[in-house]
Amino acid sequence: MDYHINIFFSEEDNGYIADIPDLPGCSGYGDTPETALQELVKVKEAWLETARNENIPVPPPRYRPAIYQVPS
Image: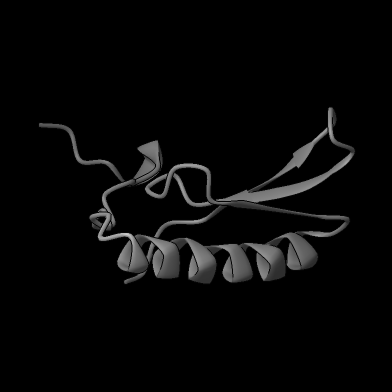
C-alpha cells in the first residue's frame, strides 16, 4: 500500500520528521529529510509487521493533503 508521507523540519527537535498520518505513531527522525525518510521506511515495515502478527487491522491509505482534496 502506498501511504502519504509528510516530511517537515521540527525546530523543537532540531531535525526532520517524516510521518505517515494513516498509521498512528509511525514516524522517523533524521538530520536531513533523506535520513528521516530512511528511518520512516524501517518504522513502517515494523508497524505493518506488528499489526499483522497481532491481528490488528491495517488502515487503508486515506490521508490527502488539503491541496489534493476535492470539495464536496
